[in-house]
Length: 382
Image 1 (cartoon, rainbow, N blue to C red):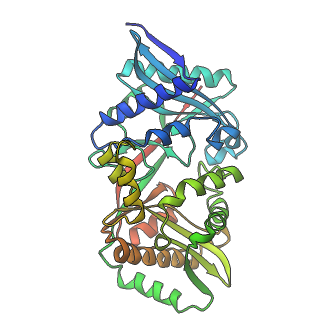
Image 2 (image 1 turned 90 degrees about the horizontal axis):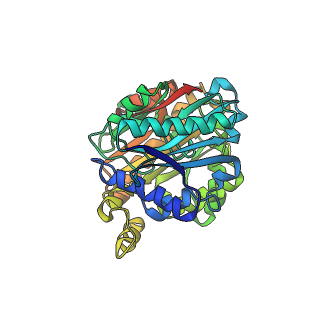
Image 3 (image 1 turned 120 degrees about the vertical axis):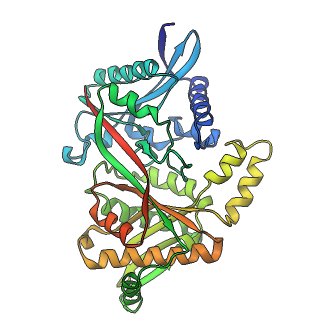
């Protein structure tokens, strides 16, 4: 039957868009359906501050009246202002939330997204990026045999072939690293950490949850500076900082956050989050009837949870110095020990890390972590 592509604009249509994605996730081995309420909020222009600097078109594919796929086409106005050498810049459109029942549907959706972006004046497209680069960037291309941790995507292996056969090629690869937190660091790394601990100029502290929004602003100030030269970097806006603080607060435990001060000035940070996906998989992403209770109990005391380090950064002025790696080793070691002591954590994941970020890759290698998942962001000229 003919494939019909239609926009999802109304509240009811956006709900259908979200529900279709959850249906695909439930049918994909090792995928974890996310909370429906959270997914609805992410595609709601009235609630997600991403829409304040973005143009978004949600699209659904139908065959014989039955929904068989979905995709987003979107333009981040902040990305258009970035230098082209950082992967974005003028003419950059994006696609995300890609799900399709078969290759024909996938190609029809990609073509529709490209047509919309072309009509908006875009000259090339990157994807999948759903919706923000800070949410779920990239298509899973390695690591399909195990479930993702918090805030990481999971996709069927055949999506890669469908996207490539539509004329897309690799633009950037993102890596995640698996770390056994029960294994101590090498003697060399331990000496580096000890040297930093004996340095009176360096002060390592946990986050103060009573002043959580202030702490988030400190962290995101460092992040916006530390990552500013990275491929694909798009700075957080003030509204996005407040939004992120509200969303992350229930998952943040002071033992899992470190802010590093040098001569009293915050210069580095690290955040680890307990893996809520373990609970979401048990409740199938549903708050009712009793999912909310299980989620609440877990968030207060996530004993036995894996941890993910989604964000870490050192101010740019210290990049390419021995101090930067020393601060990173100190933060990782402190959080690793506290995660074991407070939550009986045995495994952690670091990433994502850009495949050309040699500094972070060297740190990940030095502490004995191994690549366990790879994601690819694809590119195509329009």
